[in-house]
Length: 304
Image (cartoon, rainbow, N blue to C red; front, side, top):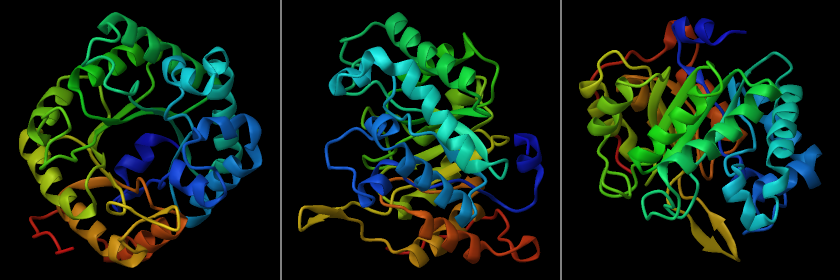
C-alpha cells in the first residue's frame, strides 16, 4: 500500500483514533506518558494499533506523540528516545501487517517551550529532527506533526523532519480557542503558511470537539484551495466520572458529523482524544462504500 494510492481513491481515507486515551481504557494510569508502555506494555500498544486496523483504519499512528527527548525527560526516558521511537514503529508495523500505512506521530515539545523562550528555534528543530530520524529509520511510511498551536513550532518541526528524511508530512493544528489555536492562529493563516511548506496534507486535530471541524476545514479550503485536508477531532470535552474522563459524543453521532467534514473537503478522517476503534468502525459504516460516499460541497454544521 502506498500513500499516493490512498490519496487517489474516491472515498475518504480512514485514519485511526486516539492513542493515549484508548490506552487509558486498556489500563494506562492517568498522568502516565503513553510512551512508557512502548517499553513496559508493548503487547497492549500493539493490541490498540491492531484494533484500529481491524476497524478499518488505513493509516495508523505510532505511540510517539510525546517522544522527543525533551518531552520524555518528564518520564525520565530522554536517554531512551531513539529506542522508544523505533520500538513504537515496530509495534505499529506488526499491527498493520501491510493493511495500513504507519505514520510517525510527532507532537509539540510541551508547555509552549518555544513560544515562551524555554528553547530556541534551533534547539526545537534539533529535537524534532532527532525524533524524525528515529521514526524514519524505524520504517514509517510518513510523518504526522499534530496538535500544534504555535506556527513557529510547526515550522520548526517541518524543518527538522525535512533535514533528515524526504518522507511525506501530514500537519495538523488544534483549533481549540474560539476557532483559533491557543496562540491565536486561525485556520486560514495556518493553511496559507502550510501551503508554502512541503506538506502532503494539512488540517485539524483534537480541538474543542467534532462540531467545529467543518467550519474550520471550509476556512482552510478557502485559503488553500488545492490542499489535501485532514479531520481528526476529539469526541468532545471530557468530564471526570469516578475519576475517569468520559467523552460526550458517542460513535454514531461522531460518524454522522464526519459526513459534514467530507462535504467540507476532508480527504482524511479519523479521531483524537476519546475516540476508539468503535468510532472508526462507525465512520466506515456511515460513509459507506464508494458508490454511497459523500461529496465535498458546502454543508451546514450539525448541532451538538
